[in-house]
Amino acid sequence: MAALIPMDANDLLAVSPKLLAQAILHRRERLSEIIPDDLEERKTELLDAEPKAKTAREERNSINSKVANLKRERNDAQKEARTLFERANEIREQLMKEGGIKNPDPKWAQEKLSQKLQNLENQLETSAGTHKTEERFINEMKSLIREHEEWVEERTSSQPLVKEMKEARNKARNLLDTAQKAHDAMVVLVQENEEMHDSFVKWEEVRKRARSRTRRLENALSSSQQALEFWKDRVEKDDFSDLLIDAERVRNGGQSSKAIARENKVARNKSNPKSAKGDEEE
Image (cartoon, rainbow, N blue to C red; front, side, top):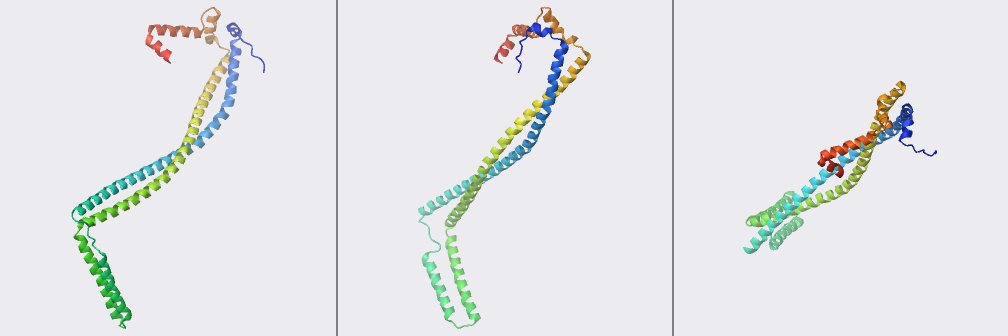
């Protein structure tokens, strides 16, 4: 690679405007040739990333919604179960103060029923009766069971608090089962959500990067095409008079456009100190 030869202001001023314009034109032509391929690659990357990022985001949000519902279901069930257990304990304490809890179906009653049923069963097995006789024995057994259940129900109804306590405990246990199932399902979804979130973050980063590069390349291509038209027209017409104003001023000992801009900035800062402070902070 050839070494670059340093050029001062006079050297630059000595270069013809047309030569400089042709150099700029050549560079813009090269950019216009290179950018489209890069732009096409970025567009392809963007088209691939956008639907994947969208799908991952939608699936993640859907899982988040399900997790929230399961969490609410679990918490509601636990809260209601706790209330029922507290009520059952209150009833138990009340019954203990009032003399204890009576078993509506004591063991002796169960044994008495069992003995009666056994006697009927023995008679049924040893009897040589007809089908009607067998049916009568079976009906008697059913009647004994029904009478026992009615007796137990009557004893239970005489202790309404006992019934309420048992129902509260049973319902509380069922609610805890519901809460556990909701929690287990939620844990599974949380794990799935972590994977889906990672997928979303990955593709969203790819999408943003591809989108940013696509925009930059589109702007660069548009700028190059506009510059091509501008400099082609200038070179063809060999018209650079309005572009040589600054060069003529420097050649005649005047300030460059950059120096003039610097002086203008200093003047503005003097007239507006707040603006100067803002410029320094920036």
